[in-house]
Image (cartoon, rainbow, N blue to C red; front, side, top):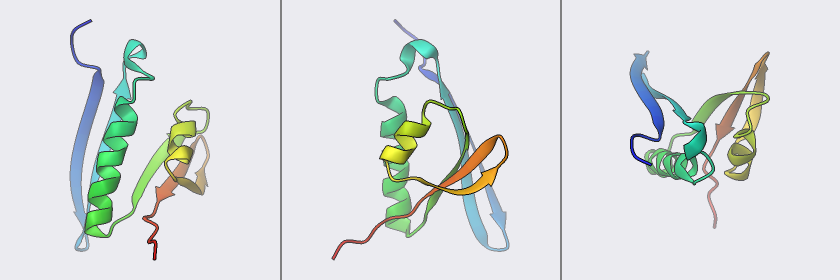
Length: 94
């Protein structure tokens, strides 16, 4: 099988001196379940931790990837109707 595993898009914004980057990703059905999404998220979480930032995501409530997000430590912060706002915050160990 050749070609890209799916689609990733990004946009950066600045709001009152607070910069954020927005990513949207999805994988083709035949490329799911191979750890690609987890690898991308772990890299993003590592970068966020190094910068002292949290990572937040909007997830459809019935999205099967919700299991992955919970396993990686994301927690639901706010119910947005069809979506849940989830946030990962670096835990500091002593």
